[in-house]
Amino acid sequence: MSHDLFSQKNPQGEYKRPERVADQIRMIVSDILITKAADPRLHGVSILHVDLSPDLMQARLFISTPQEEKEALRGLKKAAGFIRSELARNMKLRRVPVLTFVADPNEEKRSRLLCLLDSVGQELSPPEEEHPSLLMEQVS
Image (tube, rainbow, N blue to C red; front, top):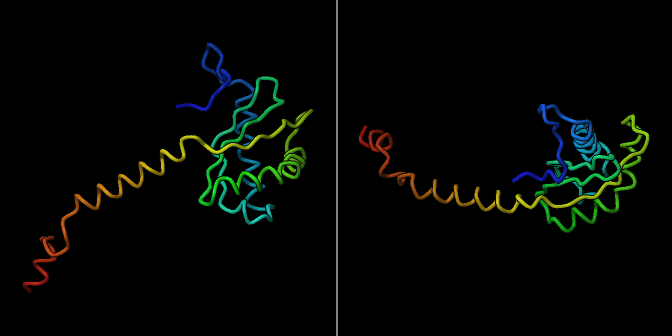
């Protein structure tokens, strides 16, 4: 499922400016979170995707975090002004978009899928005492 709320490609399949600017916002905000964010709630937060309105005035940033999502979102909301001002310093835009941070709706599904794959992998692997290479070592 794509987060894309706005059509970003023209009929020829070329990317429009909002797509390029959204990617640049994702990279710069990720860098700001890594290098300049002092709030411990923001440690480990990743920007997965940015949806940008065609007029470049609204940006929705989808996040993933190893911590509690609500706490990370509170920290991001508190730091939004700082992040926006840093973004303005690093981008050549007439107006910096309003930033809205949201939890990635697919992150929970991804986490559950990874847990299921881990449990299936553990069930399918033979117990250590039945593994042929281990039996050979025990005989020797």
